Picture 1 (spheres, one colour):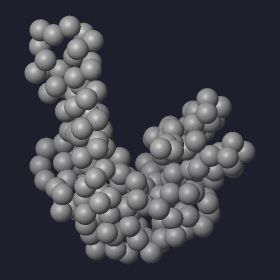
Picture 2 (cartoon, helix red, strand yellow; picture 1 turned 60 degrees about the vertical axis):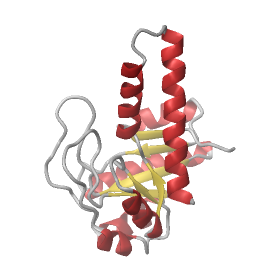
Picture 3 (cartoon, helix red, strand yellow; picture 1 turned 90 degrees about the vertical axis):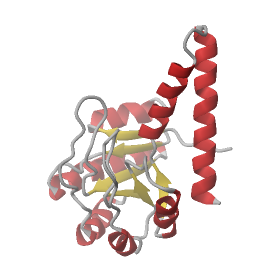
Length: 199
């Protein structure tokens, strides 16, 4: 099965260029925390560099809060503004767009409140939409976002939790058995989610 090697949340143009040099087929320069003008400028440069390598580029408008390790940002969600998203696409030429509709990165507590009306509006954009922070959604919520245009789903926190649980349950086993058990558990979770998303 064809796969892409993707740099997620690239922090600088030099990091993006290094990933491309190493053979990544897809990159993201995350300028979502920057003013729109600066996000556009930096992302446009990333697109120009990626085109020379035949790679695709993901951008982000509206910031998905949260994080990994330590305290998770529980501040307000910076939802994607549709007008800003249209302008961003026109001025950068990205191949995919990460949108902020209520999800959060990391192992946050509390329910996720998806803004599906906003996603309906964003689905008019002429590129595939990406959902970051997509752990802890219900099957119904996954189906709802896919029906409304989400075409790439980033899932980390649920996989990290499954890995940790599997390692704890395998206490006393040797290292190779622990790693094999963890890989099998992650494969099962990933396959189950993919079937849910695309069946």
